[in-house]
Image (cartoon, rainbow, N blue to C red; front, side):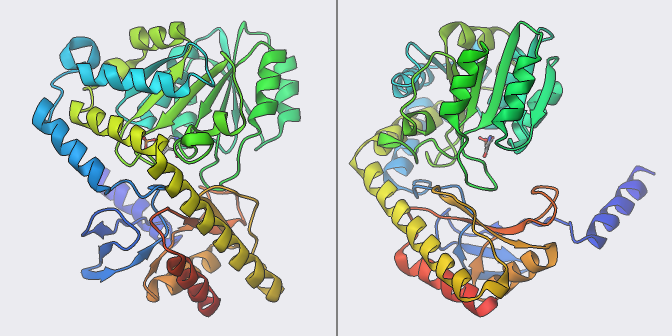
Length: 400
Ligand SMILES: *Cc1c(COP(=O)(O)O)cnc(C)c1O
């Protein structure tokens, strides 16, 4: 009965071209992975990872992880509150607190196994029945899920509509108010207006939860993230950064007022009831932070920005030459560059035409993005060479 029920639903999804498939990487994360798909192995040029600085296979981090494993073994053995918390986890938290301190004075950091768990922790632990969560409608799924699990009242505002948010804040009667936003929106690459959001938080006595999964390591001086990019400083920020994207390893952290961090540690179920990440991961992350803040990080951020400009200039020229394509390239200064082509079939056929030329650029369709805005989601990395972006532009010209 269950199996029949599931098979019927799987067939329905297939009928709407909604079946998702994994491709199997046969080589480490990078710009030119070997990929196995439907029994065929090929070398492809990939524009789909979140490894924005190209650190996921960096020799210094590979060595750091190996060194961490030699020193600390491979498993933590338990959750942080039982016996899994080690000196190297504590040292990493100290590094992260220092990292964010220019933007959140006096912050304490708490290390999590993943960003998904960190967001669940934040929204469920802070969003009790006395709180209202105000969330941008394009927030990441982990923030949506955290909101569903929380007991707080939930108010969502249309993407970027701070006038709507302000009305919601004016009408709010709960004593605790939490504004929740992605800093860089994951399907559009645009930045939340953090200065204006902070201003609203101050005027309406709210706290501002910022998910900086795509800004951490990439934006701001020394890659310190979106708060530093806008040169903001406030104790009202509750910052979540992920460590599996630009940082190239795995994990996430929350940095906030020490009382908030202590409360999470005491009550957040997705912190308490899960095994601590291996200490070797924390060891590798400390090395990653050093790379990101140092000269090598600075160089890689420059390369990434060069690729972003190159791609945008090339696409803008193509769109100007051929308006009949009806492509749209929204404003984005980040590594995430969406090329909106309209309907699902066009996005899919463009992605397949690129695949036929050896390029891996995913098509993103509703419900992940709004109806009629199906797109290629191009993500760039410092690992891409100028010739790689040139090849993508040529392939798009041929495919269109
Ligand atoms: C990837 C991502 C997460 C989840 O982080 P993981 O460490 O991959 O679990 C959370 N928020 C945003 C915006 C993300 O892009």
